[in-house]
Length: 184
Length: 184
Image (cartoon, rainbow over all chains, first blue to last red):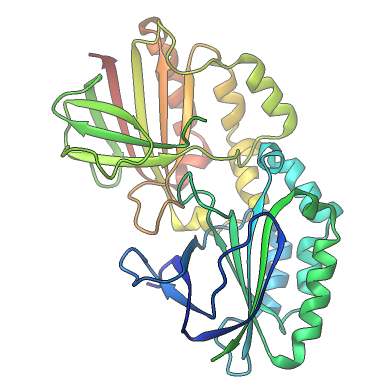
């Protein structure tokens, strides 16, 4: 059985070399030169600059039809051509979490087309979403999304992020980092 | 700021005296004579028979209209007349978690009337729902619900549970304990 819990450890050396770290909203993370993605409990992780944790979970917004479309098109992490990655830790505001499910779904998809936008970039952009908010009361981010793609798809990835960040959903984002990586 | 993280510690002595512990599905918990509800991180908790953890979170199913109706009628924990409590740790099956949001909502409310049933017992039955599933990959339950009510409302509470357990949603419950308590 594969674990649902992952650690993202920023330090001086590691599997993924940091190309850039941009702070789009809120407090920045300390600069790291490389990131390792660790599986399972990270309590024993040796000293790094920082370790963020996230857990994969059930989907919160997709309908059955959307899920089947996604599953038919998407590919997993770890493809040989995926030499580029991006790590986007993100927090949403108190206002977002006070919305009800129907209100969040309306903003997420009816208004912002979050699922539809992502679909346009499959299978080129592979992603894994990790939830942090319910790991404990003091997590610095609500989500960490890890993306992998080929170097040739970097422009497409930027285009996708631009569309998402222009959407109404992003008005609820109050902390966001954009960390770009390449296999070391 | 109040914490979102709670610990439920079963042992020999504590604030809530255990009247009964029934296993409705799955593995039983070890017998405890009393339970304490602890706030925040429970890592430093002194030895007990067991400690279950849960975290309050955003609502997953209610619509705005349902939420407003609930908020208008519900009352909080800790009322002086609430000398009785029940703790219901519960796990849902892999099949439940593989459903999409729209499918889960249909079973939860359209078919099972979970929200509507609970509404019938407000304000007599107070409740706080704690999520466990995304605290980590190895939690023994997915949810812990803590209920408080007056002794006179015990029959109403039993009636509510009977209705919920007879609903299609409960076909997805694969572990459930029902622990009844009285202020010690």
